Every structure is written in structure tokens, then in C-alpha cells.
Amino acid sequence: MSKIVTPYQDQQGTKKEQVADMFNNISKTYDFLNHFMSLGIDIIWRKKAINELQVDKPQLILDVATGTGDFAFEALSILKPKKIIGVDISQGMLDIAKQKIAKRGLSDKFEVKLGDSEKLPFGANEFDAVTVAYGVRNFENLADGLADIFRVLKPGGKAVVLEFSKPKAFPIKQLYAFYFNYVTPGIGKLFSKDARAYTYLPESVAAFPDGEAFTGMMAKAGFKNTKSRPLAFGICSIYTGIK
Image (cartoon, rainbow, N blue to C red; front, side, top):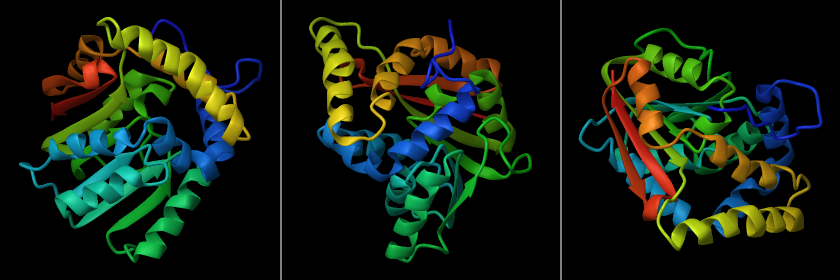
């Protein structure tokens, strides 16, 4: 990454600390705004990413940057694993996830922990699969985060990463830039008490090394058979790699 983009550029604190603060601030409106701003398409993208694990049938899954748990709930529904553990650095987001888990009666299938994506609180070779949805661009050190995901995966296990990317074709590129740079921050100001979070979103996507640059980083971390699959003209991408 050419430069580290932080949510609050005028404040002290590491990117990690600022990201945790940001998600704590927006946790109560996060789910609503996520679905609203993506017109619900984010749900379709999640399903496509989870389907990458259908053949593997993982029984123990780690969901890194689990947030309010939407990706993990979808994975439980589609893959039917024995258990999913979700990790996030934002207690505010995890509190929402815990409420959802209790409401759905899934505490035996899905548990969440406060934890750092670059120092995961697990031993080596523990998980059949690791997923990250819209979280890797928030890592303070992307190489360290990928290395730790690789560490906790069992040999033969698969990592699946879903992340925003940068479309290159006209007019999608231009429409996407307009929506992300002007519409998204505007909606964030209306509905969220932390409007800066929705200005950080396009900045973090712009700084993220997508496509071949990211699969290259996965390969450097040790992953084999790394693949990049663009969705919706490159608005989003699914990345996979095997340990």
C-alpha cells in the first residue's frame, strides 16, 4: 500500500485504534447503512464468496473482522459448519453480533471474540477455512494480517476474502467514483453520528492493492492457487488461496 489511510487523519493513534473507534461509533447504524447504500447487492456478493467454500465443506471456520456477524450468519446457513468463530477489534460491533446470536439461538454454532486480525488469538493449524468480508483494507499491516491468517489455517485449508476493488471500464469506473466519493459520504452524514467513517470508505478502497497486487501479497504470505474473481464489473472482488 502506498500510504496508510486512517479514519481520523487529524487525530493521534494507530490505524488499528482509529478503525476500532470508528466502528464503535457507527455500530448501531452499520447494518442499515450497509444494505441501504449497496441497494442490498452486498447480500448477493456475500453469498457468492461463501459459495467458494461449498466444495470444501469446512467444519470450523474463522471469520476475521466479523463486525455484526452478517457474513458468518450467511455462512452458517449455506455451509452448515459445526462452528464459526468471529473476531473483531470493535467491541461495539461485537455487541450487535452477540444480540443477533442470542436472538437467533445460535450460541452453540457462532461465537465472537475481541481480537486483533494481525495477532489472532488462536494456535497454528486450527481452522478449515478463514473468511474476511470487507475487512482487509482496514488492516494496519496487510502483510502481517495475511501471514497470521495463513498461520491459523490447517494445511489444505482455504482463505476467502471479499473486498471492494476499483472498476476500470467506462462508464462503471466514473459512476462508481461519483457514488463512492459524493453519494456515500452524503448518506453517511444524514444517518450516522460519524460522517468521517463514510469519507474514509472511498479513501481506504482507493489505497487498497486490489486484483493481482493482492493475490501477489497472498502468495508472498504462503498461499497457493491464489485467484481473484471480480464481481459487478470490478466493484468488488473475491480472492481465494490455499495453505
